[in-house]
Image (cartoon, rainbow, N blue to C red; front, side, top):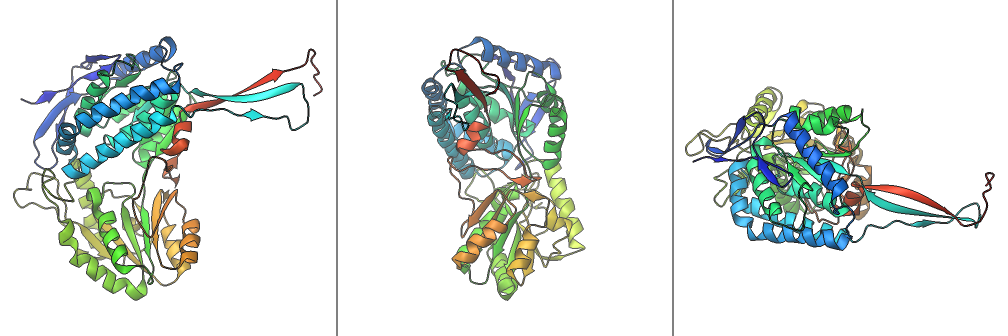
Length: 491
């Protein structure tokens, strides 16, 4: 029997007022995994009301950070205890290899632990009067922003949720979560674990599944929501910014990417080759930090591409429940988008590998796409400038360092990138010249909870992780204390 999930609002499970559900589909098999709510604005409003009551009427925001951190560590412990079944469900919904999903949940646990500690590190500062007046004293304090709306995509359903939820809870906020419908079942199972933590009052955490145009739009528009944190496409991020402008709420938008991976001729060849293979096709290319543009120096270009193609067997798609590196893309809509880009590019560029949907059994009912490489891609082509979010790599040769940087920055995105060279001076200079928020130097995709993450240009605003990620959920209040008995308005 197909599992049917409900929304989690004010510590209770409740079906959508619409009575409607949508199916969560296994992208590897086409089978129905679960039915999840097709929620309405009224459902979303009930969750917002619950979060507001919890913020105003419970002691959650007023607790010492040590107490909130202890509650967060309880969540982490329950997540660790249920890691395997939750990873299996998430793999069935998302299509990501099981081992990768297990690692994702382990990193989510690490983030909960990190921000549980950061809950004790919320501090203001004292400010001495620059004009030398001894009769007043300034201090700043930090306060939680209030109700935070959290909008999570389907590509990293648990980890990306925790990236937002953990700092929000550490800061003392209450939240309303909107998961992607494609991965709402595993998110609701996570809510069930949170429900078991008695130290978290009802209404502090709420979760409403449904269309972004309904639930997400209500979170962005609603005056009771003081903050929205979103991960997804730049198009939707821009829509959220426009909708939220009437209420002037604070926003964190982690949007699209088109990561440049620059390989100079003096790079550690094997290391760069292996990293490029993984970084290009990890998660079937469904990562905003995936290496989707290989910008390789002309002197090694031909050999590098030849060797990359020769190693594609190492990333051959397979059953995500088995030992494989790449699974399917997550949704039928995304499959169609990826194939459309490939069809267009075949008329414009040199297809050297892949390019087809995998239709042989046992993958004929799934959304599998061959790892695809196009060579000698025009830097101005859609393949080189637009986010595809699939296992498609555009190779662009370059002659000079200046040309490499120009190609790398020739996109509206600015999330992440990588540079490979044995010249340490060039390494740091190119890293500084890249218009991105994250640069990996002679490595790729290394990340820790302490490291802030976020892009520039159309890749978004704000930061996640690190102390900067905590600050996204805090207001700064300045307080001025008069020390004299009188008042001089001319000070």
